[in-house]
Amino acid sequence: MMKVSRHNSRSGSHGVFNPKHNDREFDVDKSVEIDSELTKYNIYWNCFDREIVRHGERTENSASFTDVEKEFYDLVYKDYVEGQNARNTKEGHKERNRTTEDLRTSDKTCPEESIHQIGKLDEHVKPEILLAATIEFLNEVSKRYGSHVHILDWALHVDEGTPHIHERHVFDVINKYGERQPKQEQALKELGFEPPDPTKKISKYNNRKISFDAECRKLLLDICKSHGLQVDEEPIYGGKKYLEKQEFIIKTVNEKCQLLQAEKDQLLADNSSLNEKKSSLQDEITDLDGKKEKKKTELANIDSFVKDVTAVAYDKACETIIDELAESIRKETSQEINNLKNEINNSNNLITKTLTKFALEQLTVLQQRLSGIKARAVNSIKKSFSSSAKKEKLLKNMVKATKPSLVGIISKYKEQIAIEDAKKAFNAPAKKTHHEQSL
Image (cartoon, rainbow, N blue to C red; front, side, top):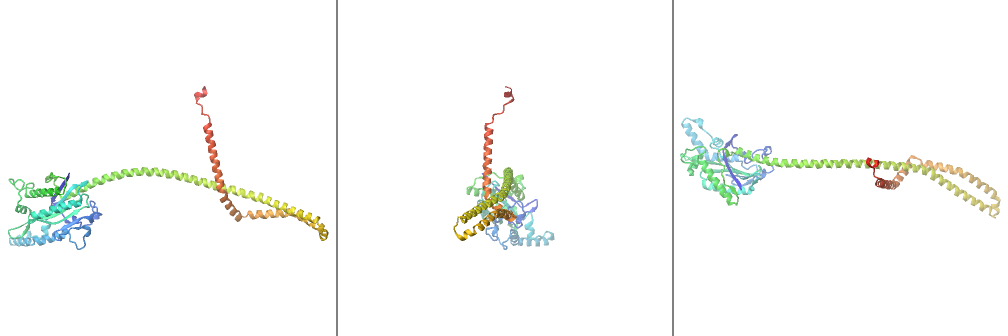
């Protein structure tokens, strides 16, 4: 069950209502109660163009509501203003003379504004349903009362929380001079409306306007029901419950603020939960960073260890392997010389026998010199391998080749140590209590 609202007024605490609010003839980005992203979906109509257009479809040449109302007052009430001014002058009261703009901006003769709404912020009809019902209502009002009630313009707002329609109209009559004059009470009288209590005099709470508004409300409710809407028919009109335009806007904004506050509370709760998760993730990241640094340190230590081991191995290789290699070459060379000596001794060749003694002596000298050659060769090779450039290059290749093996061996020994420690801890006898030791 939704409430159908139709509030009417001409002015508020800030003076007569300005139609610029209705067709957004101002910077909407500076208005706290308006969602400027939705303004383009607002819908407008005026009595001259008589076309329904969206805010986003308007051009520079589109007439504003202010221009429309100025033109209407100038066109319709010009004869009355000029005639009344002439009568004022004739009677010596030129100070009473007015313009059509004075009529438009006076709280007695300015357009009256009605605000139509079905539902409230958290439960309301779709904008298109509100629009269809209101257009049907306004068409019926024009049909029934159009001789004295003129609808000037209206706007559907979807950018202020609850969809609603601002509609402006003016009441007038043909006076005794044949001039059309804005005059509400006389217009309603000619339309056949009487005060709620005809036996009492006209007052703020007993006038034809109350009867007219009650009839309009009944008409609007009937139209809403014909559209299949379940509506609350209890009227809210007059006295403190009667809302003028500014109060209506404040009420709408307050409803929107309540909804936003609820959303804010939920966001704060979600934010608190996210902060807890963030804190937990930061702890995990810190822990992972610690493990990462530990791994870096371990890797750095392993790299340093591998380099140290490889350097020692390199130096030992230079000392041992080169010595053994040179000694092996010396032995092989000496053996070959001995074999040559035996061949010479066993030869029957005449020339060979003549040279045998000399050849054997020379071969013996060569054998003796091999030790010296060996020492020089070893020193030369060691010197070559100990040069910074070659040593660095060879060490780099050796580290690259030996690191996986060494790391694997170290990991294997760590696992074995961990297993042995676990076995010892498992097999260790339980520590006796003081009572057991006493026993």
